[in-house]
Image 1 (cartoon, rainbow, N blue to C red):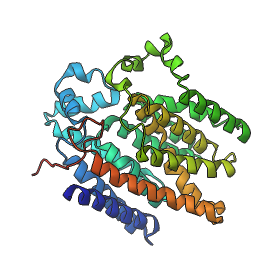
Image 2 (cartoon, rainbow, N blue to C red; image 1 turned 90 degrees about the vertical axis):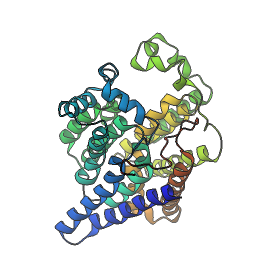
Image 3 (tube, helix red, strand yellow; image 1 turned 45 degrees about the vertical axis):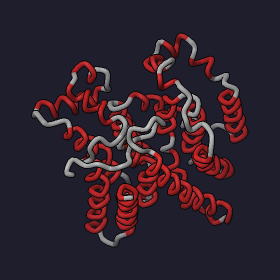
Image 4 (tube, rainbow, N blue to C red; image 1 turned 30 degrees about the horizontal axis):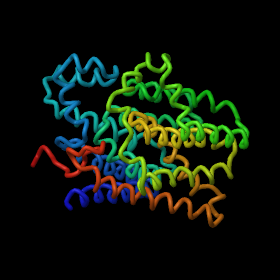
Length: 354
């Protein structure tokens, strides 16, 4: 019960702080609220002990140069710097927690900050306790996209390049920047999505993953491993809820489709497809996590748009937030430590100070 209360306090305090950070009257008040949001998220994450199924792997990698050599360049730099100063392994979680939450709290623009941080908390906060490297990369990717959509493309490319240093999956996002220069007709886009949907559901897409091109790649090692097993969440209410949010958002976005939001929709379609793939092979969950970042931009767009004045669109925005909040609660309850269901292992919460 204490764990459920803790995570909900983090969410509520973060949401209140984010609201004030966007709407407070003075600049000093807004900056102070951003610091409040940061510490609300940072302190529990930095002080956690054995939280997240990957915690022990990172501790082992911290003490093993051989294991560390298999990680991305940016992560290796962090570990080597910390070891240079003879810091204990817990320092790794303190520093990586800073890298995850500082960009989100201090580098996102003021416009839409409240909704973006609320969505970050609901979608990524619990997830960040488990997959540290991916979370650092996603945090900088979020800043990259925030800059990209306001026209600062060079800065966006630099942040994206920095994100690539912490997780190779970010490289899969780079083609979207090039695709954004191309306007795909709405009907063609829907047709492409339906074809991809068909290939996934009929398992024809897996012909690609049995090819030598994929097997010889970095991710080919996962074929035949535990990560290629079917997930335990392939059916049920949880899957329906996770799919309902992006599908509802996609329908509304397709109706409103124009050049301004085409990048959002490309990301959202890839999110749905990668999530369907993840139901069959676990490792694709990392891709669905990557492209779920689209919701952080599309849901605020739905609220902001004049199109939002239409009643049914308004309901989509509220329903999406409500479902994400329910899924947040479900993650807390079901993702217990030492389970065999592939959960994130964030319940119960334990700290180094008690």
